Length: 230
Image (cartoon, rainbow, N blue to C red; front, side):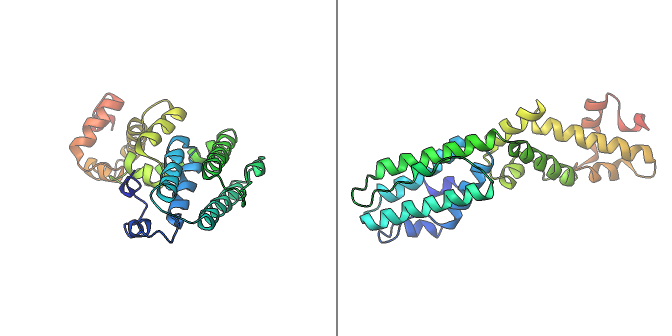
């Protein structure tokens, strides 16, 4: 899987991948993992871990001592996740790097299992709903931005667009676009009642790029045009 599949990875890291004296685990990759874990995105977490293992163990000729350093670095990252998410789960038995008889495949499996347990713990705690609350807060603060979209939300919360859409719908039982449209029209109704703002100004204030698109959305949601609501 090319680095371009992970938009948070700067292009200069591609040069590092070809240099066999270094193992590949830059801070930007660890931050990407953290975002995926926090979002409870197991599928993309496993994909990114598999990418890390492939780059280091299949594409590079690393010494055993360098491979051990890689695994120790990744384990340190796991400990940081446990501390940051305040998780009290038993995974220390997975940290058993055999310095005398290293088996990279076994170590990869242990790291994968650790991430699976962490994500399972996050999904089973209130922190998952807290993440959704953060999303709603972000939407309420930015609904007037006409650039607010699935793509922007996915980037903001370190998810793929498809995973964000599934995650959001799980909580509100409707798509993000329908939720945002309803929110904008609800805000517009409040402004219309004030009677001191034009329809064009209201459209812009609630995130529409034209009064025409706003009028269409308003009539679709409310059943009457904004002029009739006044």
